[in-house]
Image (cartoon, rainbow, N blue to C red; front, side):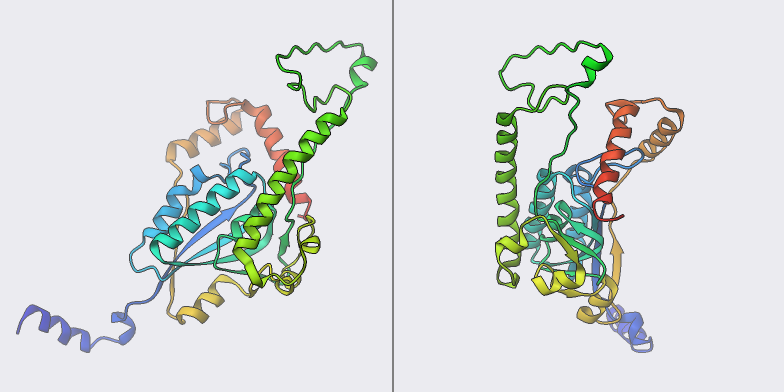
Length: 294
């Protein structure tokens, strides 16, 4: 008997579940603010997730790609770059992408979700916030009160735009709003390209920056239905579907250095702007989450 025949004979005595090729679905997780570093946690940017995305799409035998998203948003640029990478590989590898919203899938987080061919959410997920926001503070009278003179020197008439210690200038506000309109228009176009005829409401209702529960988002066409990753993938590929989590790579040295630097209060180059920048980033990240009651 040939070796091939011998192996076939052996297989005939084994349970079918041992020999049957089970469908594989690589899983990517995008968690946290986008383009915003926080202490002990790298930011969600193309550079931090590119290798994981490439690995997921390169897995032999993959039937589809599943992405779990839990993000309140952040950088529009990084959201767009990640979106484009996923769509490019989905077309190149001819793999369908399923996205699953967790607690929050809003603003830039929803932009990431639009990279999916189908989007699903929990009934209580927060979805939407298709808009652009900028926030700052103004202290034009504070320095005078405490007797401090601030001196600013610029080359370029508008280099001090939105300086918090100068009175707000209408021209500055006009320029910022014009930029926001450009970013908002690009966001709207991306959503329309992704969702197409699935959207059930007019632009003036969908693109105001409002956010909704997963249940309402399904009614608006922002998501395709209410489900979770395991349930939906078993429905599509059968109960024997197997999952492979593909996480962004983090070196041992980076993890250890980060823990030591954070505990000691010293900066060792892991966070270029030092501890103060880390605290500010953490506050900014916290404020993003808090907009959605989390």
